[in-house]
Image (tube, rainbow, N blue to C red):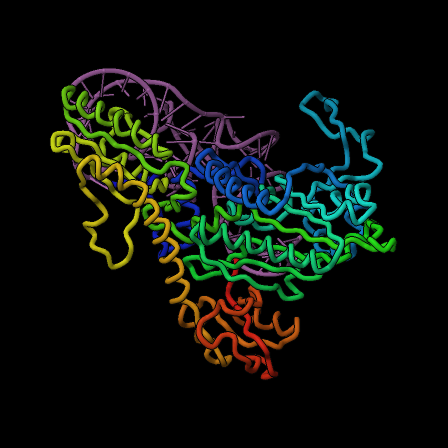
Length: 508
RNA sequence: CGGGGCAUAGCUCAGCCUGGCUAGAGCGCUUGCUUUGGGAGCAAGAGGUCGUGAGUUCGAAUCUCACUGCCCCGACCA
């Protein structure tokens, strides 16, 4: 009966970051690798990424974008063309300086061949604006060449000092959209359009509610005129930036001299955007929905919708039960569901239940002799909503009804996860009007999202970060906050008049 | 880069202080039998350059020194 060491998950309220790592390990989503700060994404984790990619990619295509691929290596000189951009990334770049190894003199291995130094070092891309704009320069001559709407799926490297699986690793997978437009208006529209695509995927696919808004100048992307983000609340009440969309103005067009002739025959600089989400979204998923038993996945992103666990005592029962399992699988597959039949032998049904629960499979179907005899199936959902009858987690239904119920049950769970996350965020969201209340909220009451009026400077922001470990997550677009959050007021720190509230929180 | 800690089986760790027989435990893994409606039991078995190098010693996982790697805290984090 004792839980085995390897399956133990630290409860969230005991140690949240340990819980997070335990879930990743037990659900076999990722491993640390031999390379510092890098992770191995295991099949269970990669399958989630593939589903996310599909959802995002379909939407990118629907909004007129096409995929392309640009080099991993960027000449150092490219990075230095845009002043803000270099400054932002200089401190976290991996640099290729040589192109050859040679055997050591004592034959004990290999070493860098000093004679192979590159004339110009190459940076492993931390983002691709510069290499892409050097290509766009050759593609764009006329307004007829615009817009260019391109997305790239790629890996990038940012040499982070401190790493956490999925949330911040030295290498990660992402997509980066890079668009070029003839007018500022069109580019700004694109920036907002793509932020809304991210919001749609976050809420309707990931079941993770987000707040859309503008970043403050201090948090802006290096080289952007304006940055926008979607911000989600994790179960420890910290904010996680889940996606960003940037209006780059003409900054990169200037840096790479990308001009076009407009309809009036005049030369103009091109307007740009870039936008991205990464494997960090998997971290967001974990921290939004999962519980002390393990991973919980919204059905739309679950690589497996249902697992079938057979129960039997002897060969007769086994034959009977297996026959039924095969029929159930066949019928569920006609419904386009991803179903797995756990027919491993020598493992108790209970052990299998735990196994699949920790991996976050939304639905379990139990098939035992009693069920076959009675013409029933047992459906067990991965999670129960708060306040619901605990018995309702398990539904015993006549076979045909059960099979017809699967899809609607998955849809119900998808909806409930979003509702649950919205309710959690609402509980830990506060409209705050004084610094005293702010201090109480973060130092005594556990914190969350604080909607406060702000008119401070960048230095004031740093002061708030020092005092409370909080930062301005974004300046939300109107209509997303609790009652009264769109009213005018006074800055909680400086008392200066403020037209709009910002969201402050601790952040990842 | 500063402060602290750790390095022994796939994982978590004991053994080190006070040197001494064949280096251990739990979990995991393999095989067989018995089991199976919420993490099964028994039996047998595989698995180790004790991070690396040097030193002290009759003898080093254990003591000394150097090196390397990792973790935690801080700094850093478009």
